[in-house]
Structure formats: structure tokens, C-alpha cells
Amino acid sequence: MEELEKHAENLQILIQKAAEKTIPKRKASSRLKPWWNDYISELRKILSREKNRWKKSRTEENHKQYQQARNCYFNEIKMTKSNCWNQFLEKAEGKEIFKAFAYIK
Image (cartoon, rainbow, N blue to C red; front, side, top):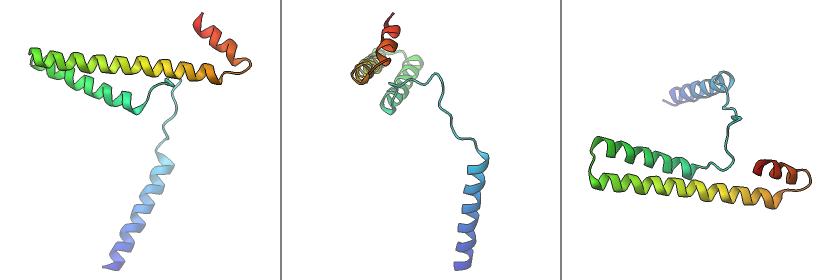
């Protein structure tokens, strides 16, 4: 039985090494948003779920839940963007100040 477990472990290690060599790593997108986070991703899933529920059964209760999820999602994005911008401005030094100026033009 121990020999079988050793073979299974060796097989698992070989599969992991093969996967690391052949499966490409996820690359950072040029469209990546610095303010996006896991919480916003979760809110987006909730929003999608509530929207689908409302589309399937157009009741007043489902519509209220959808609106609440939508408002929560967009308010969180607005707050996160604002916080990200403020942090950028606080840390900005030298030429980064001009970069910020170009953003607001």
C-alpha cells in the first residue's frame, strides 16, 4: 500500500511539473484597472445573479433586489475609484504630478 502511495505522489509531482511548464501564466492585461478588487468581482456576480432572477420572474421583490444589488455595485466602484485616485495623488512625486494633470484634462 505504501508503494502505491509513493507512486501516486510521484505521479502528482510529475503532473504538476508538466502543467507548470506547458500551461501559460496569466498575463496582466493592458486594460487592467488598478481599482478593481475581489470584493467588486463578488458584487458583480451578485448583480448578475439578481438581474437574471428578475428577468426570469419579473416581480416587484426581484426588481427591488436587483436595484439594491446594482446600486451597491456601482457605489462600491465609485468609492474604490475615488480612494485609488486619492492614493495616487498622495504618492505622486516629480513627473507623476504631470501625469495626474494629463489624466484630468
